[in-house]
Image 1 (cartoon, rainbow, N blue to C red):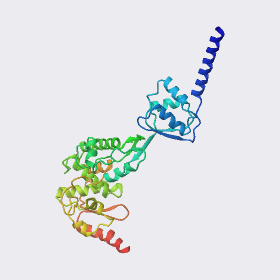
Image 2 (cartoon, helix red, strand yellow; image 1 turned 45 degrees about the vertical axis):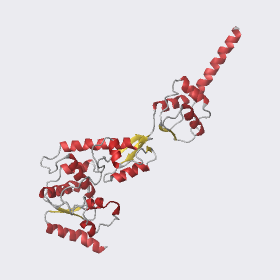
Image 3 (cartoon, rainbow, N blue to C red; image 1 turned 90 degrees about the vertical axis):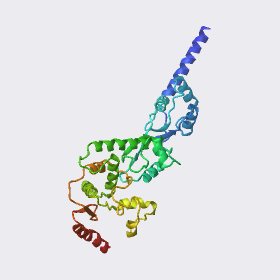
Length: 331
């Protein structure tokens, strides 16, 4: 009996040693880096089978036993994982139990429309597309926005997220980031601004964003629009007309387009547009609320990204002739 007991103990020790060696032995990665995705709600058994089929595990039974022994069988986290080096089964379990997922990113660009933002989110393979089939109004309701129109409400920036994150989560973060930047800019605004609300500042900032070709002109462009608002003049800015045309805009703005009345045609209607026309960045927000002190009422593109500013219509017409008409003739 003593010999049998000793033999059993020896077998248990050998099995434990073998199991321990198996648990701590580095796995051979099929490729480096090795990337795999565990979907939401995946079971331990299915995760082990998936890792075996991908070539990371040679067999899945001991991996399942190891997870159960360590109490991690119900702790598998969904997400996209990237292994840059060989890891043991113990390390692999810790990684997927802690949810040490790789991060993906998406860049939201200044001047984008909300339609372009949605298209970028829809095109990302690393995002869970929760907004699919939702209207703009429903999206605003889901993220807790109080506005009725989505344009201009999302801050341009690069957002990092775990693969598989919902596009609604990204939109919510972007929305609240814009609210924070807008409120901070509004709190530090010039006291004599003709803008009455933060939302009006957002509208003007979006127009400045679309009109700015050279960053150094941004404050001057804002100064021209602020001067026009103070005098009750029409803003007469092409990007607002283009926005109002929507999908009908074919890349060429014609005289008849400037004469067609829409809520966004600032050649036909005074004051600001009903909503922003794009996503303004932080610099555009600051320019709208800290415009240049200038007597300029007009500006025209020089053709190199910069603008020529004028304080009188006669000087503006001369600038148009110099930079626009002559350039069109040379073509």
